[in-house]
Every structure is written in C-alpha cells, then in structure tokens.
Image: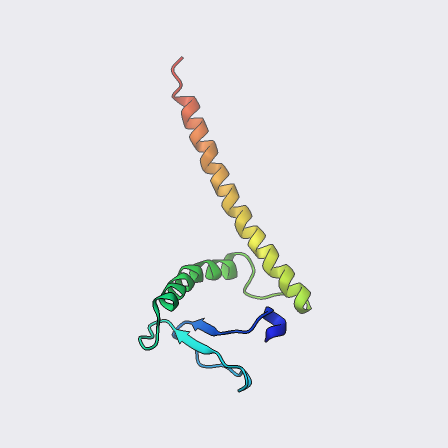
Length: 114
C-alpha cells in the first residue's frame, strides 16, 4: 500500500456500506464509518463531514464525466483518466462562471442611462 500512496495509512474513513478490507494483518490502521459513535474524536468527525461534502462531487464525476468506467490501460491510464475528468469538471464550472459574468455585463449595459 505504501507504494501506491507514498506513506502509511493511519485510518480509513468510509460510508455505512463499507464491509471490511483484505489488507494483510501487518498493516495496522483504523476504519471509521459514518454514523459511528465510539472512539470518534472531533478531528475524525471533521474529516467524516469533509468526506460527506466530497461524495456528491465524486458521484457527479462518475455520472457526468465518464469516471464510472476507465477505458485507458494500466496505472498511467488510471491517472490520466482522473486528471482529464477533473479538468472537464473544472472547465464546466469555468464556463458556467463565464456565462454568469456575461449575463451580468449584458444586464449592466442594458440599463445604462443614455
């Protein structure tokens, strides 16, 4: 796991549907699920709320930006697919912002006293 991430995993934050992991027994990390009451510190609660805020974005990427299935090969393809999906997501947000800006400019030009 360290080779994939770059450092050791201390804890995993998961949703209620999480059913366990198949990590080797020498990996020692804690798993926290949403709705869990015991042994949850304020820092972990913040991290769980942050995860809840990111979940809709992940669902949107999967449905609207072709992250549901990766058609590219190997790890390089996985990384490329994630970067391109994020770029498409950001580009769509930028276009929406520019559209709103253009509308505001046109409204201001329309109501300029002559």
